[in-house]
Length: 101
Image 1 (spheres, rainbow, N blue to C red):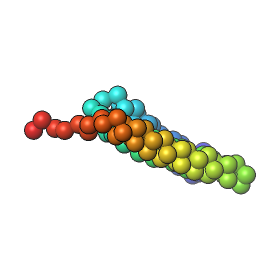
Image 2: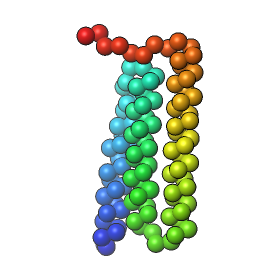
Image 3: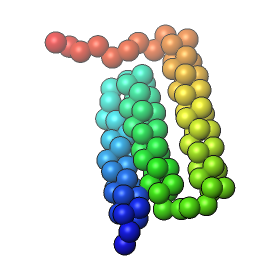
Image 4: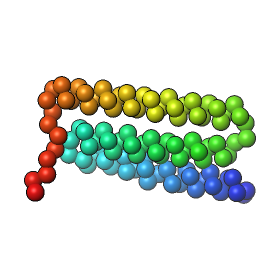
């Protein structure tokens, strides 16, 4: 196993906690705004690590370009969808969670 394969595998393994953290944040956080934040931030970082690991495992420039385009498209779609959902919640007067302390 070469250095590129080792680093690529490490990046894949490093992405797992981000995906799990985003999923747990979606399930455990108290309101829509914190859930959206946890999900979009953690999943975008996790996907970035998966793409970086995949880039290390290939030497085909066409595949690297396609991986970058997919990553960029997900970044844009995630940002826009998060903004739209938060805007709809705000329009419906969904109050952000406030600590009781």
